Length: 112
Length: 117
Image (cartoon, rainbow over all chains, first blue to last red; front, side, top):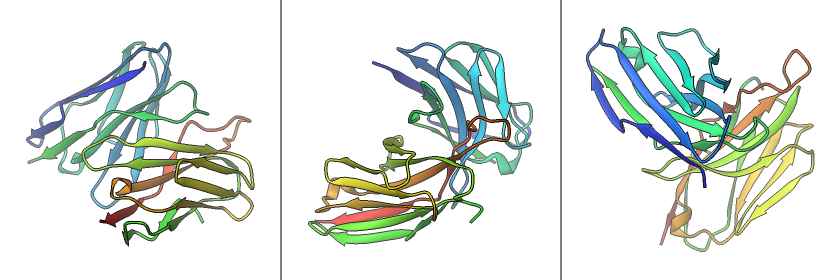
């Protein structure tokens, strides 16, 4: 069966520090991969999605970037975190965009 | 409607009550509507993906209907149980500008359901 792993579960970082959140999927090949953020009091917002290795689409201009160095690995990064980057980050995968998405457990990121 | 909106924001019911809540989405360029259940300290879990106007889907005591012409979907829970307590999210997917559907899901802010024993 397919599983998705996302880490770390919580992270406290100072403003201006770098960020790397990792997500890996097991048990499937060539998944569609997604990074979402939920800011306080708001719905899930799609940040990036990827349909294949090295293929990244960005949905909103921001201080973050994403990479897909391997088929089942999706990384969310920042060179310098801002206070506004605080939130709950979720990684998800789907077999195709037509099918439901399966989410990781999320990372709660607090910027001090 | 430009965004996906869900109502009510929260709902408290007694065990055994039946309940329903609403998801409103843009009807123009509609492609698909997703429903997810998000329990505290867990990850969101897919309930339904719906595409056809008039479609009705059922999973145990939970069912959903879809009206793509007017842009709304209802989620029904029959005989609510404490384990149904969760935030219920809907998300809309639209046709893109180049002949295919977009990969982007637009999520509502959810309906928080609390079922008291």
